[in-house]
Amino acid sequence: MATYTFEPPVAKILPRYLADTRGLQYLLFRYYQPEYKGVNVYALSDGTFAQDYPTPENQNTNFPLPFNPTEPNAPYAQWTNIDGTLSFKTLPVRIEKIYLGGHIYTITAGEAEKLSAAGYEDRITVTP
Image (tube, rainbow, N blue to C red):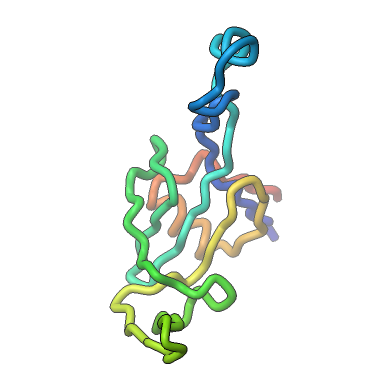
C-alpha cells in the first residue's frame, strides 16, 4: 500500500533585516536574499484550499476569519467582547484541516487527490 506525504509550500518572504535597521547591519544584510518561511495551507469545507501567503501553487488567501485555532473546524467562531459577553458568528465556509508550513504530513489517497487537483501535486510524495 502506498504512503502519501504532503509538505506545504515555502516562500521567500522574511527579510534579513528589519525595516528600521541602520548602520553596519543594513550595509551588510541588504545584499542577502530573504529567508524562506513555511506557508500554512487551509482545507476549507467547500472543498477548496487557501493559504496565509500567496505562492505559485495557490494564490487564494481568502480563508474564513475569525476562527478558533484550538478547534478550527468548528461551524462557528466565538470571541469575548470588552464587557465580558461572548459573541458567536456562524461561518458559511469553515476550516476543515490546517497543514502548517515547515512540517511534513502523512495523508490519505483522497487528500492527495484533492491537493493535486488544487495545484499541490509537486508537494506530494508517494512511497510504495
